[in-house]
Length: 229
Length: 250
View (tube, rainbow over the protein chains, first blue to last red):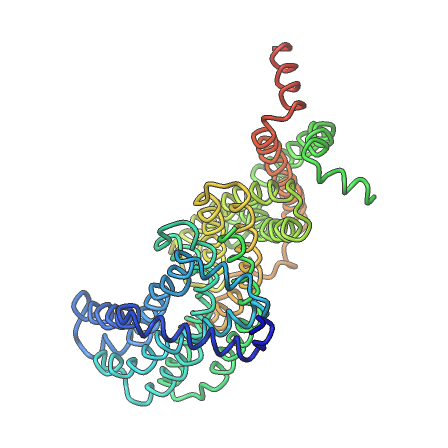
């Protein structure tokens, strides 16, 4: 079989399925970010004030910030293994456009690490006494925001994958870049709590996602080429 | 014109060309800064509302503009480094990061001092303040990433990518914080109330310190870049000749 016989779509599907399989076979990579999310959120009532009045005020921010940190911590598994076993080099050498490979890879990663965060968020919102009308904007915001965070985190991870341990450096690089998503995401919940329509902010989050989808793979690709060098 | 630009791309020519105009730049920068500061701090009239506190504008405003503007310069240099692989562009970008982060830090500090006197607090999560804090973080990130690499080439390329990602992000950060701020707090009139209303005696010194601090950006960036050139080219014959020449003169 000639290597050119795999089309763009075929390679996209292959990369996507491979990413799913990798995460599926090392459940820790999938479960640990979720556990971090739950544990970190539950520290706030313990460290602060457990009264519902206080918690409902900070709930949106706490859920969003911990989701952001959980996404960032989950990024390690996106390129680390591939870098160490050499398959990242194969990915960079493949005849199909790198852009689509990377999109497929991040999409697969998001599906098994980002989406569970979105699905778990109402439970944590309930524990933080967030009023029920805010569940929908919280989940919608996370649904639109976590893929963007994944794409931004992938840029940071691609830049630092060659450095051995990247944990703290990754945080320093990625957190400032993630602030707009955080601001719009928590803004959505606060607007909904004020009884105002939140679709405008959802559209802004969608715009950020569209921007990240179109530009981030270029930056990730450039960064990976530097790291693999 | 193009040839001149092309020559600037060579570390040696950059070093030699800057040697010729560095004394002039130094003189002009010091002249503007001294005139502006003496005039602004010593002779400009007191503001009827803020008293002497307003005098922070002579330093704070140019520093803040400078910090933003250095980032743009750094991004242009990063793009030039990525596209044409010009080494001098990367050395300039590296110097820009240090100068930019210092300007940002001093702007934040002087702003806090002014804020304490006028608003009664050192810090407010206002859009402008917040976006400057994030600019500061992004500068720190670029510097941290650069220092994490052992190889100079990887460090320069990685820092360039992050700088370019940052420049896409900065306008979004600004608008995000404006939106967030207007959502949470009543809009505060934080600008120096009605700039047009201030008399020229107050405003003219701002131009002196403003251009002086921009001159200082160039001066510091060029000086740092020259050091960087000498360090990276330390094995080249011309640098060794230069060092011998300087040593024999001393």
